[in-house]
Amino acid sequence: MANNSGIQRKLQEYYNVLKMTRKPDREEFFTTTKVSVAVMFFVGAIGFLIYLLTVLIERLV
Image (tube, rainbow, N blue to C red; front, side, top):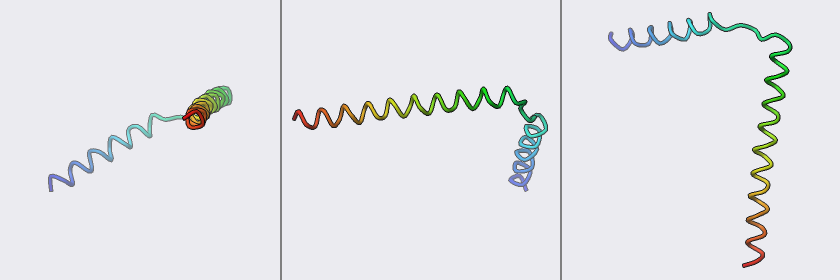
């Protein structure tokens, strides 16, 4: 029965977190979206540069 108590406690923690959440307003949503897109673009650009470097090194060897 000790395991069941642990599960109930964890579910209560999740429920408490959900009670604190709220729907973002329009400005907050768009700001978050812009930052997310910028980070995805940045990470993609770094990945593409690494790919180009590996192709360049491969051709030189």
